[in-house]
Length: 121
Image 1: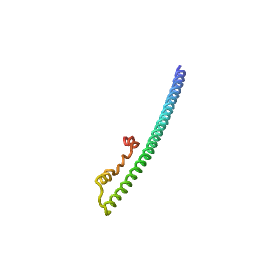
Image 2 (image 1 turned 60 degrees about the vertical axis):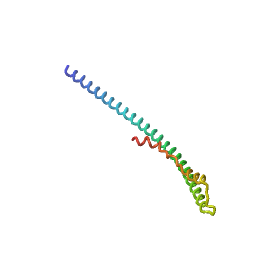
Image 3 (image 1 turned 30 degrees about the vertical axis):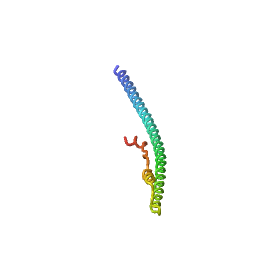
Image 4 (image 1 turned 30 degrees about the horizontal axis):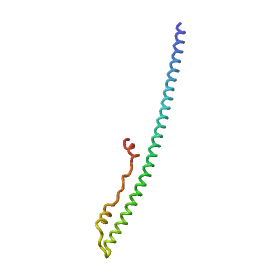
């Protein structure tokens, strides 16, 4: 009877160890799948941020080019005003001066919308 009881206990112990190993393997597989999923989500988010950065850079490039054009126009208008004022005529209407002064540069805002999510990190 004692031998039969020991044999049952040994079989139960082997079965229990096998079950524990299966559970541990299942948990490890689940963790690996979760890691793969998180890595995939991070890569997708990174790609979205990079695309947004490129769009912002392109928009900022256009805005800067427009600002440069406006500055160059202002320089030309200022040189023209100086030439007229230094010429023999020497008279410039108040409207002309007001136009030259008030049509100065307007740079517009530089975009950084794609950087805002990263500032929360």
